[in-house]
Length: 281
Image (tube, rainbow, N blue to C red; front, side):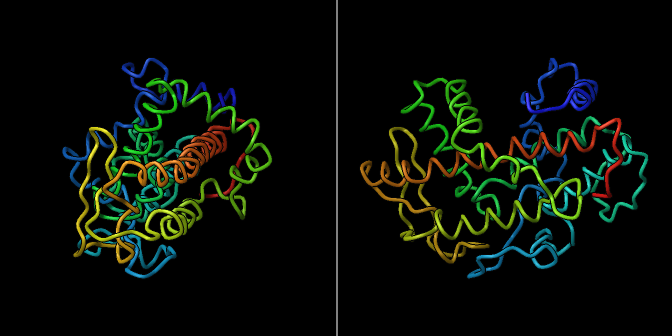
């Protein structure tokens, strides 16, 4: 509903038939194919050094072998360029060799949608999968179960109401990118890293467990990559303490979901505008 008429028509044209016109239905596709497209695995995160509560593209955007540009922000730039090239008559020299053919615009759209989601995850700027479960799965699942009557649609409606009410004054700034850019993933990544330090790892206990009902994740206490010098998302063995952590962090998660959605729509609106030529991504 945040897409312009032009963008909505183009998105529907690009989506596979299995999506039935719904972009949301294919936003997890990039996770589904990461074991088939092995080259795509590093594109879901960036790796920040220990003790660094900031993000820098040249330092942090690489895979485990040190190949540059192979990270979530690099992927967002490249798939945006692919779509820009097709729909704005611009033909950039793609800097990364890992990208699929620019002709496969359906996959470019599905990758872009997924990676804009990934870069907004507070703990997605890391290499440790168990951390991601806490922030991009457990908190959301727990919220749906305990606060929204096990109905995901109700949670979505609550976030949409906040977009039009509580966060209405902020939405225009979420959409904007400096210097007339099409997309600005470095901004999104910097936000996530700062939030990871401020909220996710603060007062964490190494080796502790986050537990809620049947959901349990025991976290490693050492040999962790990225920001994990702070230890993983603050976890405890007791449900009351989990409740305190959960209730204080849920608003952050929900706001990041909102920002990701608004920004994805804004990027697609700029890409698929039939009347206005925009600057290079």
